[in-house]
Image (cartoon, rainbow, N blue to C red; front, side):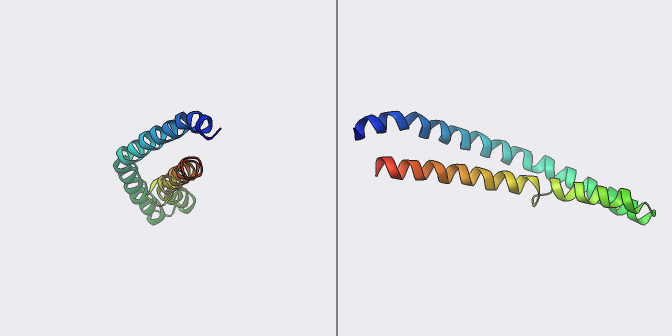
Length: 96
């Protein structure tokens, strides 16, 4: 019975491993694009605040935060970590 469970779970573990690997690579490759976009949006946000366009400045600064390393990329890294934790939990439970 335990052998059948190992055979059934092995493809799930392998697919989760490949998924985490691909997502980590995509996150790593897109980090500099998001960093550049966050910098440009932050500069434009500050310039909009200086020119007394407060609403546009705040919108641009919020967008800059979302594409900065503390916004959407951090949420993606957290999600990748949770998927990897799930893979390790399944692997430890089935394979001992």
